Image 1 (cartoon, rainbow, N blue to C red):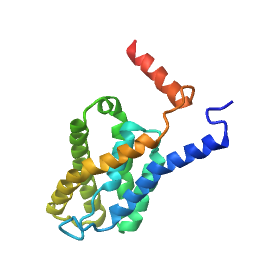
Image 2 (tube, rainbow, N blue to C red):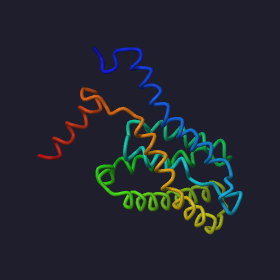
Image 3 (cartoon, rainbow, N blue to C red):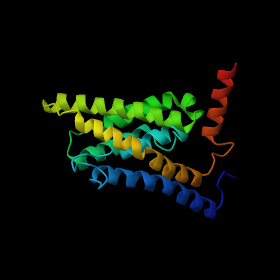
Image 4 (cartoon, rainbow, N blue to C red):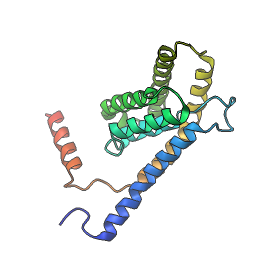
Length: 191
């Protein structure tokens, strides 16, 4: 008998998993669209970066490296930037945040918000450098500054939406491979 043995339980699990993935898809779409809250139509908020950051802290198995790469590649394609630019940034951010997950998971919202500020700053610098090296032209940093300011201002709202979608997810089963792997990792660290 498996963790989800009936069809109703499987359908329920599938519907619950659709909530965060649908929200990530919406963040990806809104990442490309010029939002009316921005001072310039050329500014794009790193909304998908917020999603990758959140899920890398609270449910790293939900967004794999491949999903982060595909989301970044789709973003590159839709925005018309060199292919791989955002994909590289999202994969590096996911890798770094998962590596620092044990620290971030136990922190208050203010520390999570400060962590996003630092991650978004590093991602903006990485994007600026990569774009400049690939295209040979360097854009001014004032647009990056305003993008960082606005995106960190709306981070609490996006965090709240992601947190609501996190509540829709079921807890990992006690005997699932993820839960067993996590338990064995914590036992090794405590010794």
